[in-house]
Amino acid sequence: MSVLIWAVLAFIVIFIANSVKIVRQYEKGLVETLGKYTGTKASGANIIIPIFQRMLRVDMRERVIDVPPQSVITKDNVSVIVDAIIYFQVTDPVKVVYNIENFAIAALKLAQTNLRNVIGDMELDSTLTSREKINTQLRVVMDEATDKWGVKVTRVEIQKIDPPRDITDAMSKQMKAEREKRANILEAEGLRQAAILKAEGAKQAVILDAEAVKEKQVLEATGEAEAIRKVAEAEKYKIEVVYNAIHEGKPTNDLIAIKYLEALGKVADGQATKIFLPLETAGVTASIGGIAELFKDTSKLTKTKFTG
Image (tube, rainbow, N blue to C red):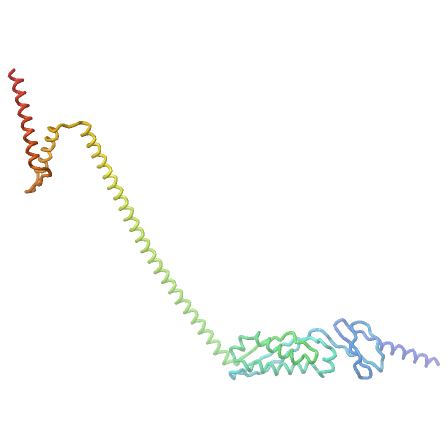
């Protein structure tokens, strides 16, 4: 009797232990009843019926698949070694369990196939310089293919793309030649810019010299004009003073005649053989006659004074 009781107690303990299932925070629990999916359990403690039910745990965290290096032929028939890393996360635990037998193997094979397709449509130069483009194309293709498996491909990263050694050496020489070419171009461009700047400086110097000469000539002409104006004003003032002095002195005809004769003497005192007189000859003769009479009268008065 005691053995039976202990057996029953042991069965109860085992039954309870198999009935309580703990689902972790990052997991989902799929419950099958007699082999058929009947529900999904959240994280925490869950009760099932042993023997009739079982629980499958599905990890919902983001995981990584390492695609091993493989040889891929580019569009221009160059064989390169490529490897990649795939990041994925389960979005539907039911699909990932019941729609695909082994998702990890399926995703790996899918990545290798699509990697060949993507790189096979690109030339070597584009392959080496377009990693981001390859990552994006591969992620889009795999995300569409794995959607029915309840998985989302979050990222695809190409780790390395290794062309053959001879291609690498040729590319290295090409890059060196390109760098030397750019250096020569930059040097020539620098010399050209220096020559242009030098010519511009010489041109500017000539322009400044011409401007300086122009300014000097303008200033000299302005000064000369100002001097002429000052001289003219002085002459004008002189004439006005003389004219006013003559009129204020009220000169007689005799004085005017004497001054006229003095002026004629100065005109005749020269090397010219012909002299043009500005006044009429008759008027001049009359003036001279008047002066002669004036001298006669003056001499008579002088004799009278001495005899008397």
